[in-house]
Image (cartoon, rainbow, N blue to C red; front, side, top):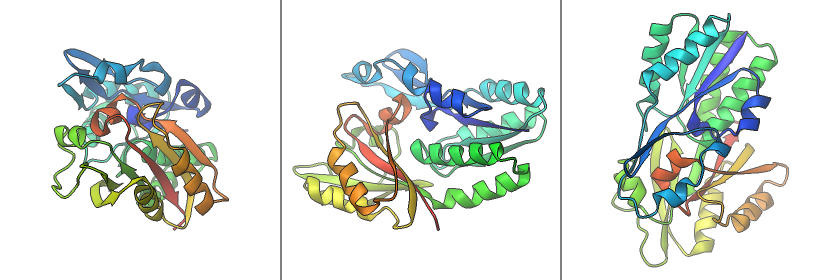
Length: 271
């Protein structure tokens, strides 16, 4: 039997977790002002964007080591082999923490650096769940995941660079959010600046063009319910008419790093 452990940036709702079988989600920590929180299921985080407004201190921290140890031991004691999929080690120390916890917990546990985050990781975890439900052997699932993660990426843009800079995730001085310019980024292992697009249409066209033609799953994601992604979604539908496009809102941890109004698309390609 295989169980999946992941971190809360995966963006699963309470219903998602219940429908996916043996999946455990370890909370990533975050701070807004002087208040400390644990990121929960997507529908359990309250009005975090309202709390963020006007707060100079908004930051995140990797899950506590004890959270991973508890999750691992609970599953291994029930006889499960565990595959743990966490956000990119280029963006967080979560992978290192999970590896230390796995060594302490004992049992058959494999920790995979997803090389992605958020809904890119969501796609990879979904693949792991499907393979486990299909009865694939542990080592086969791990091998497939290591190959699949190379086919996953995220394209996104932000309204302001303040959050990316404050969180230490951006070191490229070429990215601009002045006048009518908005930056376009890719995230595959790390965040890579692609170009400053002039105007809304150019930004959407550049973002669409960065999605591989062989994409087989797409998730349009946005920071804040009021962020309008309708035109972006329609452009993706026109380019990928055979692909169902899911829409999701990001949780507090990712919102702290990209800021309200940010949006993008996560994809998994066929090749």
